[in-house]
Image (tube, each protein chain N blue to C red):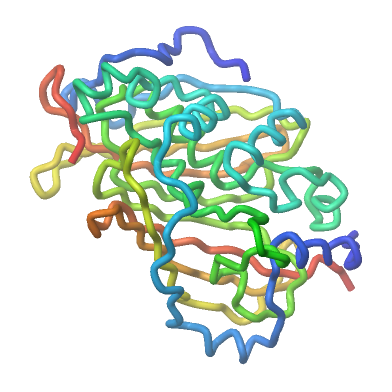
Length: 183
Length: 158
């Protein structure tokens, strides 16, 4: 059974914005503007991630092989969204960052779960690159009931560019913003 | 994470388009999800959404326990396909649908198959359907489109 009090911790860790479905509809088409990713593409973060999913590709681990075959060490495509994750705190900041539009669309649901992604990879991303991204709200559905509860599906699209302004990837994300309480 | 024998994870050899055919099956990869792996997942992906590390929170969401995040599943399905195809295959598109949370205590098992082989805009492509299953059923399903080199030793990178 859902526990609404416990779910309020989402507010402190992800800073969800609350409102009605009608308010949410008004957000369709809204864009975040270009946001520079916290860190440039770096090998320590790549190795950490590859050790998580146990990806042993020499494109991620072997500098000389990667230089010979890939023009340098590559970032795994699975890290695309990792580069856009914000730090939870930085000097002068008291509130958790509200960087993702998908969590800022005002809706009643106390929590969320990610549902699907569709990513296209257009150019290699290499160590030394620095990505920025822009997010756009594409759709918010009427309330739908699922096995987890009742809520709305929120679709946003991310466009990632490198430091030369070239689009390296696009990424469409659907999350389910829901209340877990069951009547 | 354990995996089936015969997976050449560190191979530098990439399969050419000629060497891959619709119907080819990928090696099965299986592992049991632990709390430690969920913690590593949160750290390595900078994702501190509570459902991925707070077991009480996950249960309040009506999940069975804390569960893997999207970025793990993306990198994991890419790795399972990439281990088989080789490092100079280029992932052009990944469609990932999460059917149910993959939770601590679950045993993950993959099923992967080449579903399509075709050419488009001069590129030699294959599509792979990969399921991430647990003892509770389907966890996630991916459709991966890869460009492959036409000749041995070449790269499919754009």
